[in-house]
Length: 197
Image (cartoon, rainbow, N blue to C red):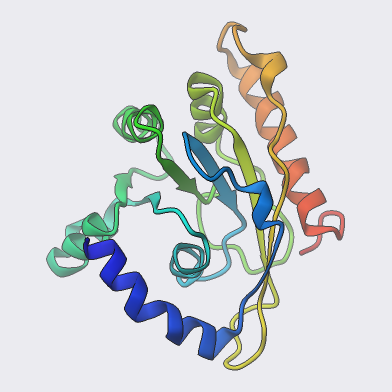
């Protein structure tokens, strides 16, 4: 209920200030377990995606946000859960798998931190592990054109990344590197501009 109320309040403001244009909405599954992942240039990214996409997104968010009482209350009510960045956070992975097992949408920014360079950085391997274990559709999303007031931002939702050939393989570093690389490449293709966003 809180999510729906917050979205109803914030969405008109987002459309007024940033005029988002969405391409590829039909690539997003309308139901069932789904992983979405995106480039990350601003603190506004999860808010934008939460407003423009029709399904509730359960984001993995940095642990530090959950140490501030009011912010922690807000982000938890919006469906987010904490992750310790720079570590193999087993608890965060389990939370993500639980979200997916329940047929919901899990969202992550796999570059690990905000990146304003325009170049897609190497992904952390956590998302690869979650994708293989959950066997959920994996959808790349690109947010382009920055966040200048009253300037349109473009959001492109790509087609699902085909990772089926990796299902059933023994989990190891090589597997996670290969899966991560395919997901990085899918995000570049989604951007439509090679490595540069």
